[in-house]
Image 1 (tube, one colour):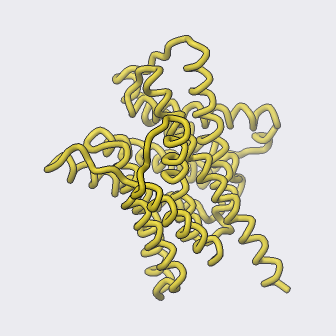
Image 2: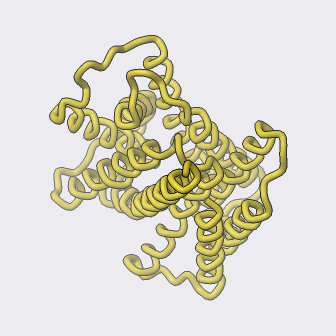
Length: 297
């Protein structure tokens, strides 16, 4: 009986993670539009992303009385500090990789490394090798990312430095995925997401202010900023953290692969960027890897 009840729960968790991955993918397009129309640097865009997402969630919790009875115990403060530090460092390392290489290279290396890190960490902790379907799912995802990624425009030490920052970002998100699985008394997934995002944004704020965070007071820019903060960031991370404790760690990591896949498809449809045969083959492999991972759950 317990197996029959647990299986649908895990399937719903996996589906929720896939929705979160799609929402993150729309963040790539909206973040790019915000940077272009607002004239912002990459770090400033990341700062806006975390501050707007976290701020919107805190206001929602306050209006819905979701903050009632919250006690700031030491475990709660430590968990929020951990989430904020990991989210902030993840964004900073990722956008440092973008600066040194390109958006495509940084995204593919960062997101592509997450399932590898999580799979390796899970195997070491469990002291046994991953199952065949898990390995197939990760391999298909990495092959799809390799085909989707563009040839980097920089070489030499800039490329090596960018890849190093991208791997650091991937490792940070992997730690986030594994570290936040255990619940803390008095801190649910909504509070964790809200204050974690807000803390991460505050950590990046000094760098964002130095680089400039002034936004043009135009309706299109403000609408993109609001969507960027609320939907792919606030809602996306709420869904991710909601089921992080019940979903398999590798499935949670594989869900992140939907971000570059969704971003690539949206760029082709909205921005009319031609993926080419190689790109669409990569998208197909990436989708196959996600399907195998979902069926494995």
